[in-house]
Length: 100
Image (cartoon, helix red, strand yellow):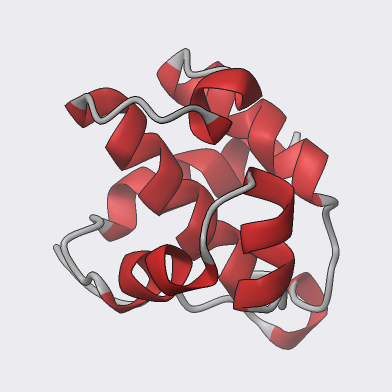
């Protein structure tokens, strides 16, 4: 199912740091922060970046903040955020890891 990630109000607004979200991405996909920040274009890394961006946005981070953390151009982050091909299930997997 492809859909926008929807979190309840109490879960939003920076409930988790960007580094915590990056750690959850690493646990879920085996992609380290160094790889998220790299120029690599492999499918797994690209998916990790998209899911990271979508989850960070769901927790209230702005595109500029996500771009600064990942050391990517803000335009790329905007593209990731508009990309609805990120499966809700993938994002929910990361969110479940964060809640532990």
